[in-house]
Image (cartoon, rainbow, N blue to C red; front, side, top):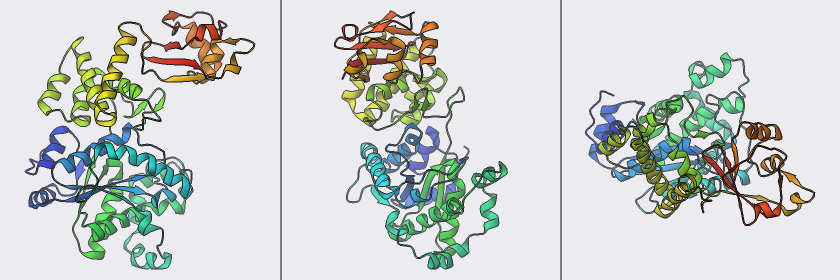
Amino acid sequence: MTYQPKSDFLRVMIERGYVADCTDFEALDNTLLSGAVTAYIGYDATAASLHVGHLLNVMMLRWFQKTGNRPITLMGGGTTKVGDPSFRSDERPLLDDAAIQANIDGMQQVFARYLNYGDDAALMLNNAEWLDDLNYLTFLRDIGRHFSVNRMLSFESVKSRLDREQSLSFLEFNYMILQAYDFLELNRRYGCQLQMGGSDQWGNIVNGIDLTRRVDDTVIWGLTSPLLTTSDGRKMGKSAGGAVWLNGEMLSPYEFWQFWRNTTDADVGRFLKLYTELPVEECERLGNLQGSEINDAKIRLANEVTTLLHGADAAASAEATAREVFEQGGAGGDLEVATLPAAALDGGLSVAQMLVQTGITSSGKEAKRLISEGGLRLNNEAVTDPQLIVDAALIGEGLKVSVGKKKHRMVQIG
């Protein structure tokens, strides 16, 4: 990044690694210098929680507010009914209004940890407010006429789907028009001048900028973040167990802490800059540690990120549990609990069956392979027989199940 920003927000964005591209760095920078700016990021309500893949953009909104500006979290109560086709191979499942609202309720819990809402603070809006009651013919005439189908087909998010000869429904094709219309409405209603998002949203963002210029003769901007992968090529936010959710009810604070503690050495410095508020110099110092000292940096990363989301007490408790589990061989008070019905123990239950019934493994075949490869321990004792019988006496007040060195569960009788 060669641009040298003057505004606090762009300086933070560039020096910490948040920026992939901007429609006009200099014009945006000058506008930020002239007073508080309003910006938004949109989130479709496709799940009951945000996940780690969303966290980079949430941190951008947090820094936006910390540098004196007004962020908008736009919930896609309307656009979720259509579904974003960007870089997908198939159409998203359609959700009803109740499911969409339940997902929005879950996502709002996360935003409240990172942003200050209220008078003259961050805004939480829902695009169903203006999309649900659109008149179709009026919308086509006033908005649709500004969109070239030729240009829409050229966007990579659409083109890649068509090049693979995968179906793109007319419903999905409308998504980019609705997102562009969101930007126009937010500019009209709230003076919003900036849309931010991942670099996969570049085409949708540019559409909104172009539409607002054509309809209202107003100049607005777009800023995108890079789509992150870890140093070993994995998509950021994914773990062996699936998505790393930000709601504590869907992923325990301990497991969230462990995700960050298990960061690859090469990613530590970069993740400290993106996901914590530590000074850049400290992030670089920690990221440059070598040997066993890099583990201290990983613990610092896990503590800082967990504190932002779940609070300092949850971070301290997770670290204490990890130390007990890994260093002292104990059970650990924060381990995720898997409940086994008492009736499941009637007639005898093999350890392989227990692993499947508690969801620790997805199949009996996986369980047997795990055991044969020496990857299972019960209460820190290695298990070699997949037919070992698990009974109430063995479980007692809680049976610690360890899969490899990093995955641990507490099995209890429910």
